[in-house]
Length: 585
Image (cartoon, rainbow, N blue to C red):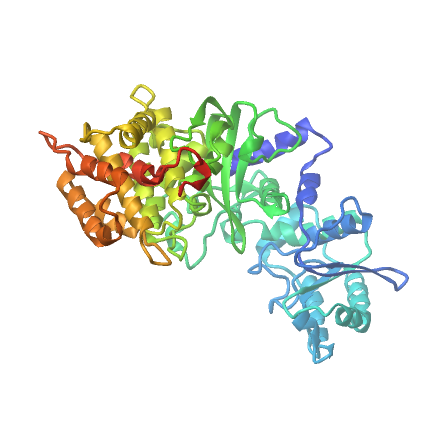
């Protein structure tokens, strides 16, 4: 996986020489909140304060300088510091990073700060371990000169009081960084960064081997092997580690992960995207809506923890956000606020399904280890997301519809049933039904359009209740379930409760095993609200007659689709032909 991504990282620079690897990384590099100070040779200071949500201007020479110097001064990770006591967090003699509480205490320079600085520069001069010394020697590094180190140390020490005044002026909090830089050239920063970085690039130098004068080691990116994880080591094989890479590859991997860490859209951090294989546009990383040409891509999802890691990778031999066959999301229930239409992009389909079927809960829970219940996410819906998210993600993010096609009926009904437990508004159920019917028709177009069939039956029911003067009877199972749904909504509308709890449908109706269970549930609600219904109510009486007269010869499966349609569609009992705006739904 990592080697393939590195190849595309390098290939990008070959296609676009102006976007070499370092330029790509720096273009997306984000300065963390803190106070940045450049100590100039004449004793002056250049300052940049980065707030938590500040937006920095582009192409500012000072900002670009700080980005380059900071990029070449940061630790690989906190477990690989220069300062053994981890008070100073920079990596070379030109920079000095620490937190505000390490720098100041009780309105003055911290009494132990000088001790921390002296220890930091002493370590920079100290002889490294044998493995590190060998790596640096192979790269042509000479030991640091004591005079140069002391000069840098003295310049930092001499600036402490002036820096303290700057800190006080900004009111910086304890956990914010203070970053000091000496005014040196970019080449000098990059060279001294290499002195720190080369011995730290590998996971553990004890796994290094030298082949033809070249050092090979275990990658530190997306890999962890230490005493706490002994099971990762190969115990019976001739080699102990999964794989080894060169120093150059290790450096490229570090830059790759820094580049991924800086990926944003509209100032929001990204967690997944696509890297095209072969020829591509100048912007190497893309989100789904930006992949507009069918081609091979690598799909990545990364976790932004303490360190960025790739936790999902897939090679997609032919991916395009635009679908070969669009999905017509029909408004089967004529819901006034349903934004359906013909969608031909996976990203748009995903947004539509996420909103109207999953109540905005699917996408945010694609990759969490466990979907947690909350006030807006009942446990039953969390369980349905756990069951369906892999199939949905494989289709909507990777273009593989095989899994969802085989289970779309079960998945969509399961989500609708789960939504009933926390249904705030009846139209939300109708929007979910529209999505269900549209997806069933899309994936199983050889069968009858269920939504259209139920819609036709509903129109026939409306005609029968509104215009027929003679006694009416139920003529089909679909008509029966539509009538029951209409009656159930009518009963709910008579309730005097300030908050209606539709989960009675989830517990009772949705749990019904056969027709008799449905009739029993309907009768229970009828008895509860019978006192509020006028005896001479023609439309209600016709609807009740239809619901009471159905008695099929053979047992039939419960038709929840028709029942939910009847519950959610415009209620025929309240229908006013002259003024549709007065309808209750």
